Image (cartoon, rainbow, N blue to C red):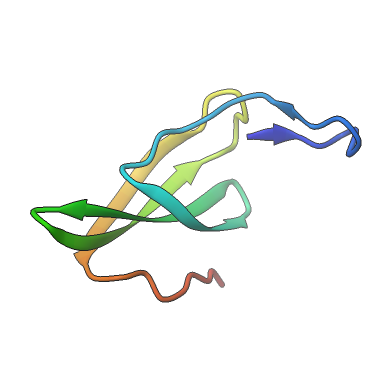
Length: 77
């Protein structure tokens, strides 16, 4: 999580671990939807982590789903 109040000097205020490499992020309201990819049993897997960002200092994963294969896109409506 970044504080962008001063765009010329962003500050990290919080973080949240995901299983693999975050490849997509969409923010909607108080949630960030983070798509990540990782290897498991020599196969590529993707997951979606739903992160509550209502307190930027302590973002918390509140849900997730994992599937085999590559993440092709991420959108929230």
